[in-house]
Every structure is written in C-alpha cells, then in structure tokens.
Length: 240
Image (cartoon, rainbow, N blue to C red; front, side, top):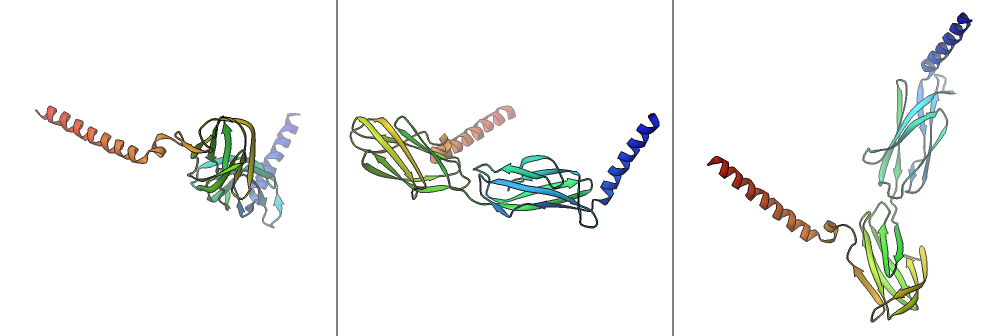
C-alpha cells in the first residue's frame, strides 16, 4: 500500500515537472482600449514548445497608469478574467503582468477619458459631482416649473458644485438636462422659496483649499513665517 502511494506521488511530481519544463511561452489576451466603467476581460495562456496551449496556474496583476496595484489573483491557463474598471479610473496606459515559474509576460491596454457627473437634488439644493476621470465642463439646463435656467459647470476630478434653486414660495416640478439631453432627471413637488426664479451658488463644494486657494496660499505663507520666527527666537535663546 505504501509503495503504491509512493509511486502515485512520484508520478504526480514527474507530471508537474514535465509541465514546467514544456511551458515555453506565456501570453496575455486583452483588447487595446477601454473606457471607465467597462469590463476588462482578459486571458493568460501558457504554450509549450510546439505553440500548443497547455494547462497551469498563473499569477497575474493589473496596474493603473501610476503603477498602483488595482487587482491580482491566480487563474488557470485560458481562463477568462473579468475586472470592472471604476468610473474614475485614471486615464492612460494600464498594464497586466503575468508570471508562471520563470516565465513572465506583460501587456498594455489604454483607458480613455470619461466626462461624467453625478447629479442629485437634496431639498432645494442641486448637487453636481464629477465622478469621471477628466475635468467636467458642460452646460446644464434646469427647468423650474416652466422657466428654464442654464448653469455652466466646471469641475475638477472628484470636485462638486452645489446650486440652490429659488422661486416664489411653492412646490415645483424640477427638470435637469445634462449636456445635449445625455442625462435627464425629473423631480416632482419640490418646495422652493425666494423672491424670483433663479440659481444661487452655495458654498461647501469641495474642500476648503479648493474653495479658497488664495486664502490657503496666504495661510501657508503665514504659517511658514511663524515657523521661521519661532525657530530664530529659539536659536537665539539657546545661543545666549
């Protein structure tokens, strides 16, 4: 019985060894380009010295444009792997790397730009956030009842803008059209207040440094001056 187990184990080792020996090439099959939100489908494939596909477990990694690791795993030769690109995936060439024993391969694919905003209404404030991977620059048509207003919206990546809708007190139907009717949103029975129908910019979009870059620069310079002055005083005190 023990002898039989030894024979089976030896055959297993031999087959594994032969598989490693005859694996001569590793290839990655993937399309050339995608846009954020797409499914990246790819395969890692092993070939022998006769260019025939063979089996094996292959390690793989997907890195973004800044070589940050986005996903990794192990897949069988020829198995389809699916990775969902986030909508804010960095634009530019991404890389898939695969390795099997001493064999490695890599392939590039390009991630294009996606100009996209998430639009929602909270009470009387319209919130527009850039969820794409490139600056967002579009005109947005806003209907307050039968009256239309146009907002030119420019947002850096992940930045958001808040717009308060105003109208003589009452409830209104709000319709928001993004770009050339690419995205149409409708909200019923929205309670608004104000003297006239219009749009008001609301503070609170982005962080403090994005909202007040000049103030941020001034505070940074002031902090630097304070540090230098305090440092000099401490130095002079220790010298005395």
